[in-house]
Image 1 (cartoon, rainbow, N blue to C red):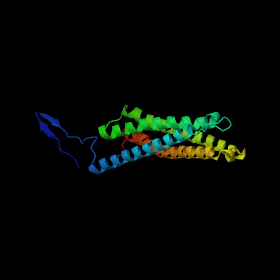
Image 2 (cartoon, rainbow, N blue to C red):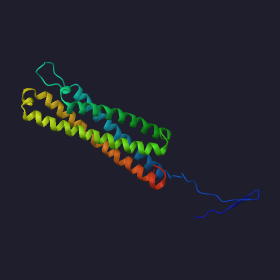
Image 3 (spheres, helix red, strand yellow):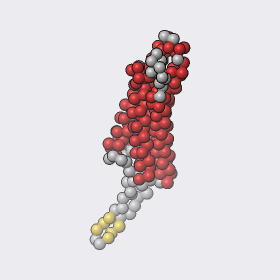
Image 4 (cartoon, one colour):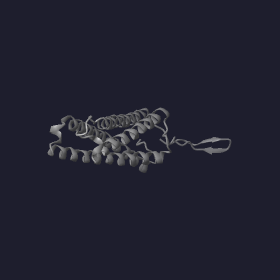
Length: 193
């Protein structure tokens, strides 16, 4: 539909449609999209925190019993889980800020690339830590360490499984932030409508 020009004080004004006009359906889609990102980031936070807690508490008293900090792979699982939990908590806060205020914490171009880049890096960090931990647990099972102290290996398995679950949710979040990057490149805005 073409809008007709108006004459006001001898100047012809042509009305232009608002560049940021969103229908109520589009606003609801954006809200659902943002809430989905918050859910994935919160799930990543919970699983990563649980992974770190399970690994940090995986110690038994006694000099002859294995401790988590004696193994590099388990230290990697614990620290990766803690780092990703902190990052995910920050991102949950940033997402809630964006939903409540309608603006990003950083300028939009920085926020889009920050989210996507860090999601990729931290997801890879969780995956590599989980893979290293899985390999070590298999080696410990072959050396009969797990028959002597089965609870140590079970708790390590649980921690690693939580780390993989955190990776999965961070991966989903990374897909959505990648969609935002593509929308930003195509439309000049992180919103796809």
